[in-house]
Length: 388
Image (cartoon, rainbow, N blue to C red; front, top):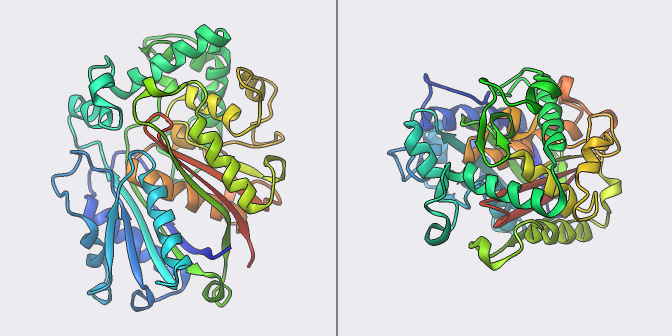
């Protein structure tokens, strides 16, 4: 363990008409520094996660963090991007700087503003996270990509409509307790299960309630080396962290296995010296409900083709053997691309610090995070533990 989260900030996710990418960055930067109890002058490096892909006209954004405080001037600042895992890419970049002793304190910010973009352009921008020569003309955009994955999973393992609806219902129920969530409504299983005017099919067997929300928002972390962290008011340590990149074309792999996800979990758990059974909860990347279902199998919670058991038998409910997405996940919380991975780390740190409010998992000691970019292309796993 070389690094710890010592402070965080999180805006509400949703339609933020009064905000800009710049204002969101400035807001969470100040709040994260205050949370950590450190001054801007003490920060050694800044890493910004911002996917963009056409959502913002301002494409050079790393230095926007400097707008938060003049003391940031002349500090190294870099923007990173790895599709929907952009936020975790920023977090892991900070870990590398700390491990290399290039920095003792790193500010990580994740941001995206999506709702100001016309709907047709939103779909085109998101589809840039797929392999365009083979998947660029997929009807329904990125939802269409996961609609194909869901249809193929159903063909191989049987109709999983009940399981997908239960995942959606679980995450919406959990999202009620999340003050940052875009949708804080318990929709219930029946609404998520049945096609209706308010819940139409979007792509393949996926309905609107199976798809995460287009969103605006930002989150930030202050990450410190262990020695520095132990002098501050809290220290949430990285016991394990793994990044696995897979082929971009789905044609080059068995897309129903999420093998990159499985390998990232294997490496992170091995590094942490724990098994899945030791975790108190997991925040996982439910961009679509079928993704969460396959992730149950990839993380080792259920055998291949039997992921439905984890939700149908209540294992992943908030009071189950391994609560998954107690925050409501991307499904209820929203998915502002560059902010998502940072948000997952912030919410996990809140849980382990006992500061998660109504979201709190009692006596949480170890938290797991899985954030992915594309269709299981960029795969990041973190295992966190409170040491102060």
